[in-house]
Image (cartoon, rainbow, N blue to C red; front, side, top):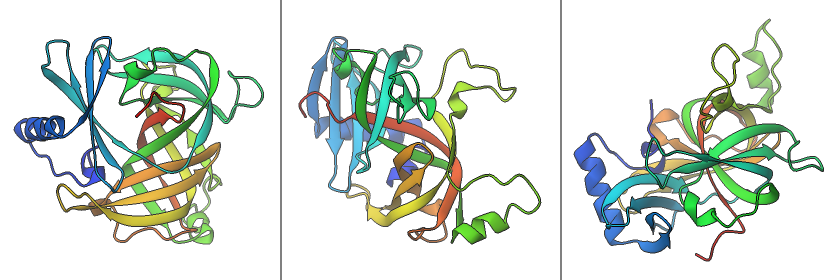
Length: 252
C-alpha cells in the first residue's frame, strides 16, 4: 500500500531514511513556535509540504506530510481531537462538511488531521471555517467515465458516483470508534488532474481536484498506483487519509 510520503513523490524505505528526510527538511524550513515546541515547514513549488515537529528542547520528534491543494471546503468545525499517543504536537479536527445552517449539521461528520494543529489553539469552536483538505490515496480505482463506473456495478447496489463515508468514525461493525481517525472512503468526479514532480527527489506524483458528495477535495496519488493520470470527468473511488489546514490560518 502506498504511504503518505510516497503519495508526494518521496521514496522512504526505512526509519533511517525517514529521519534523514526529517533532518533535511528541518534545516531548510520556516519555524513556527507554539506552546509545546516548534513546527518547521519545508515546502516546494509543486505544493508539497513537510511539517517537522520539535519539542521545547529543540529535539525533532515527528514529521507529517501535507499538500497545499487548491479546492476549498466550508466546514462546521466542532471539536479538536488530540493525538498525544503520537506526539504532543499532533492533532485533528472534528467537523461537518458543507454545514446546512447550523455548525453541527451538514452533509456528514468527519475528522481531518492538521499538520500544524497547535497553531490553531486560538480558534474559537464551534465555528464555520473554510479549509483546504487533501485526501492521500491509499487504494484507488479509476473509471474513464460515469458510464464505465456504473458498468462495473453489475447487479449490485447502485452506489452513486459521488458519495463519501467517514470510515475513520466507525469500526467494521458500524460501531463508533473510541478514537476517531482521519480516514474516508469516497467516490467522485475528477475536475482537474496533473502529474507533478517533487523537486527534492525528482520523483513524480499525481494531483487531482475531485468533486464528491459534500464538496471538493484535493487528492494526491502515488504515481505507481495508477497506469496513467486520470483525465477530467473520469470517476475515482478509493480509501484515503485526510490532511487539512484552515484558510483563516495564522500568518504564514
